[in-house]
Image (cartoon, rainbow, N blue to C red):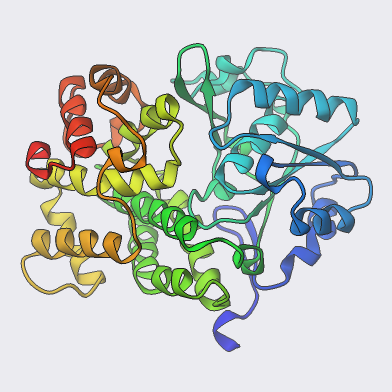
Length: 388
């Protein structure tokens, strides 16, 4: 039991970590001055016992369970209607990345007068917000992947343009995170694997992103090591609380690290998710090796360090690349985007949108729309040679 003792962390925000900590939900709300919270979750968790138990912990809590797998602006608007109708003064964002993102954006927009898209993560647009109108958030992740519980942004689809937009403000960061591994034991192996590799991609892309950020680099490396060690265990035995707790930590570490930047995996995955409604983590997991091949000339030095941390033998690129392919096979991740329902009907559109995605700016190798289209085709076809 000593390996999974409770702990309190304060970087990048206050995190209450450990089994059973959901019992402290009321205390978390009180710490932030929330008296009438709105619990925001996704459609699939509406009637889940863990949600009903959470509602009972804080009397007077309202429920909004209208968040779809890839949140759209209409979900945010519906959540705001519920928030205002119930006279709520804060949000409990409860669930996977989609629910956490939506919950944060609802809390952010609760006191704004400008439209949602005015706060897209472009330049200093975040300064348009009235900070006094940002409601406090308690975040409760039930998956270990996006790390949205420690993020200052939310991803929302503009249905009119089929674009995933990042809504950003520094004060969107949840005030308290309850990181309770007992809430993740029911995740099936497939979801555990997809979300877990999403966390790995966050760490990997952050470490390979250009720029000097040793805090992010150190967190990213340790996150990758934890995922290598504990994700297979979590998939093989969903009741393994130690593995579940380490994966929750790694997910938060990935989102902390990618303050440094992301890259081409996310730049492609965002439009793919918007146009084909694919699972974000699974999409990242499929795309990863194609981007590694593409970025090889720019990331060889980083791969040497990653290979050492993961204790891989041989030439660093080959060792890391082969390990990624085998790790995905072990976790039953498909090799192609076609395997998850993506077709080749709009490569130029995906390429164009990927080149405009905020994540593209962190890719270590400058990549234009035409090259992104080629990478997309390689991932749909499963042709790694096309990625090089």
